[in-house]
Length: 172
Image 1: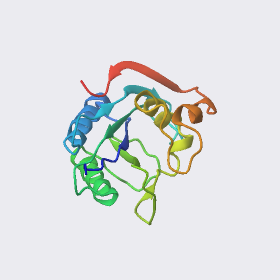
Image 2 (image 1 turned 90 degrees about the horizontal axis):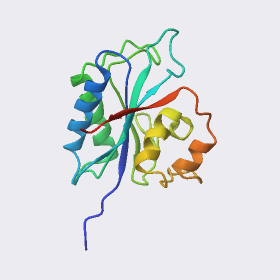
Image 3 (image 1 turned 45 degrees about the vertical axis):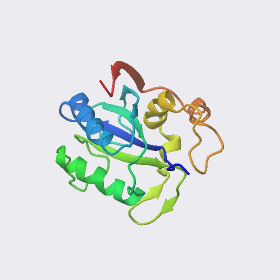
């Protein structure tokens, strides 16, 4: 009987500092938590959504991994929050403020959670162009838990303005 692997998707974003460098550092660290090779999207430049006026553009990406044995959704969330701190994330308490790094756990296999600290799948992933566009590159046929349409299908019903695929990859 083989070991069951759960594909996990993490969204990465940054709109302060050297965003591309920061996202690649985060992806390299996240790669260490996978039992095999991770998959990464291109980098996407996106308009800030629900942010303060004059917020800088975001650079976004998605990484997919098979977590090492013993990693749970809760422990992975803790690792992501710790990584944000290591990479210079500061939280002033303002909602959707510019940030050096933002790491969101989108899915953990088909697991579902609804606790104070973790909701899986991410509750707004299915309606966010900046999550779905890079996710479509690496998992176009994936169906987020609780959804009926694939990532590609969800993307088709969203407006596509404000999102630009860059000629750079997350993983180099």
